[in-house]
Image (cartoon, rainbow, N blue to C red; front, side, top):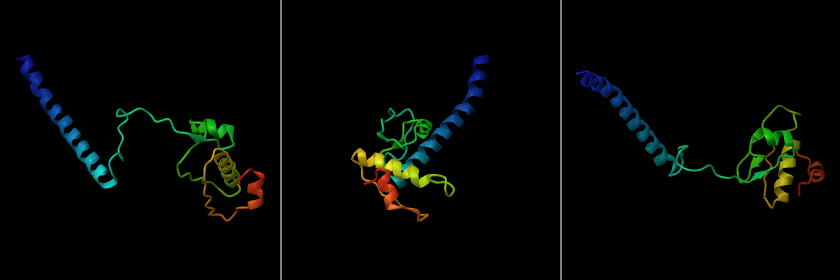
Length: 124
């Protein structure tokens, strides 16, 4: 009799778990339909990828980023207040990327780009 009562109590919880799993599966399927296969990655599905990095020119920042620099092949936005070193940091990273054979674009929303300064930092 106790086993029957315990089983009956477990049924609503199992149903809730099942309902949540169905809702999750539906949401994931909808995301993949909208954004394409592979747009959702479950942490248990695959191993972490080794990503090549470009050093920023700041050892402390490279360490803080956790991977040793900026991920190669990605779009990177450097954001912060004026005169905080964004352009210098970016130009150092671009110089390092170019040394590694990369191609970079510099989009300057603050209109602070100086070609001579960039050359002095190693930007080609």
